[in-house]
Image (tube, rainbow, N blue to C red; front, side):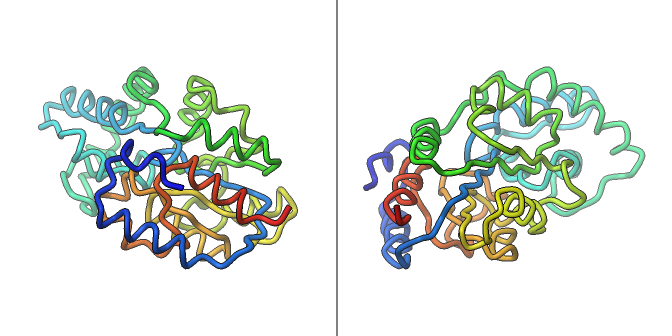
Length: 253
């Protein structure tokens, strides 16, 4: 059931923990809708986000960060990422005037470099195709702005897999608020327990729990640099294709 563990370099301890979470699942799962997070779950966007951040910092004459550091800044939208890049801190606030100057610079550089290094994680394409072939309704939920989300999904060939795409500015509230998930459930006319979110972060787990949806987490994402085992999720599944296999197997036909 775990053919892609080596592809994501999962260590033995995490392997064992992940398997135990799957073993604890209660079957069947009455899932009709699968919602998928973008950054850190569907696509590996970290290098391009870091590239844009460092071009911004260079333009402002400020010290640059490693890709690993930028990875820990991902998850709460571009404005928060820019704040973290400017301050070198997850929670600090830069001077308002600096942020006002920096934000459009970042957006310009990211728009120009949104698909330089970005690629799907191992097993993503196979997983999405498996779900669609099995008849599940698919949605993408991300905190990324729509102006970046849609071009990126088109460039990577995933746009047409999803019946609905919610970006960070599509609704008044975004993850970790449950609003995007409840909106998706209403859109497809399903109950929350008939939907599952695949994600990689505290934002995803918190939103899913608040909405009453199932949530599977992948261990290869960003999660602001935290251990995925800290998340309140139903299962940790090594890859999207294995999560998809699990959903297909666990859902009554």
